[in-house]
Length: 366
Image 1 (cartoon, helix red, strand yellow):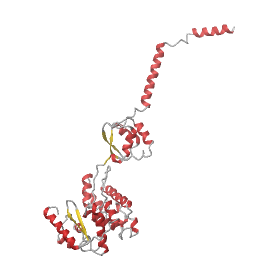
Image 2: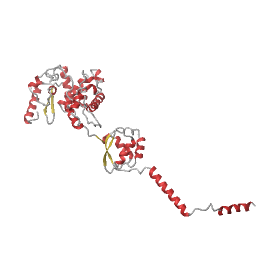
Image 3: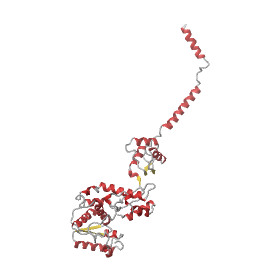
Image 4: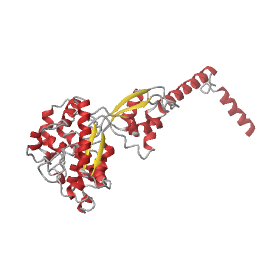
């Protein structure tokens, strides 16, 4: 009986009008739909293949302050640098320095792997800096002209800002004078920069660079600073920066220190010119006799403050002068910047004759 019932049930199933077999056409359609769905899923969920490199060209992209990794990734993708935003975010999250991408303009390769794009962004050599270039040895009055030209901010705005040095972050040991603290370097101007913000950046750079050399801390021990205060070190450096070629900084530092020790007036033309608001090498007798705080022919020791904005090389030379007994120096050729040193005043006069001969042979140079 059991066999007969199984047979009946089997027959019922086969003959049931509601349990018909699927048509081969229907099965094929279902499979196609499933394949298409899988393709769409892959297309929208899986990132496109990473570029393999090498770069096919270069492009300059700009990253704004506060841009997220996603925004940076989209910027890179739109510029043709990377193929996938997700791959870039993944590379950045997997790199300890990935969150340290700076704002600004960068020159990057195109069609490169996401990890390479991240590396190029983190390499500041790829940063495009088109801001002002401030050379060593310029006065504040000269620097603000450069800043104005590049930033399109009137020079009067910089002059006004310099007149309130307390707002610029000057260290106490600058004694309220920004001269000597507008550090020479290449600067990037942020969006909506102001005269005050630019000057603050330059002064902060000076404080950082001087601190790296030990200023002002090491000058608490006057021996470590050759008997000078921190400000006097910068002042001496500013004189050297205005007087001679960097190759002679360490020798001139020794001349300055030797003269102070004698004691003997420095008699530096550069300081007199600063006090007279002049730039020429040759000064008149009237200039040399004009009494200003910066006339080192009339006053003992260093002038009261820097006369230019020196670089670290000059400051370091004041801290580490050469050994020697020189009391005189003079640059005898302004083209080659050849400078001669001596302890003898008579030999100095001979060197001075060389300089005068150069001036006669090169009208307008002196």
